[in-house]
Image 1: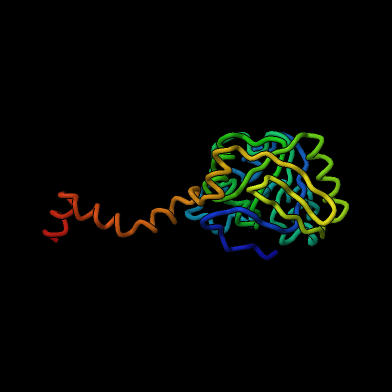
Image 2: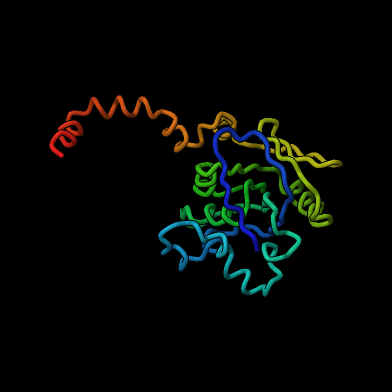
Length: 208
């Protein structure tokens, strides 16, 4: 399995790719990334461990293990995905497997926020719409879908689905304000000016 290593930056308005379906309600963060993997000192290898117990139990038949799903970037789930603990490792593991967006009926609040902090959009639709979408995807796993964040739609050559993205989340994604690190780096001049005005820092550098 080849894991993606490039991560999003700045404004996120559109993304396209193949979808992978993961059916089931109330899939919690302990299933997404089991607790024994939380001891890692970095997130780098978590993509290999995502859904580790589920995948071992299904012996290669888990959706993330199927050859046809390798390289998929949009995960389509059901209700209350990401419930349970607040571990940020869950979206980190999904991102390092290659997931760049999630679509489902609903998401646990903390998981949703942790996804946004990584630039991973979480869009919602009704239960019926999600089930129909999952069936359409599984009928042709090679389809390329486009997720338009600004228009809140998911479509391919023959189908289109209206989605819902919370207003604050939509603004953060499309303006790039979700990306706190890049924003901080872009203000390097102001950071230096502020640092030079702090007396305790100036005293430290002067005496060292």
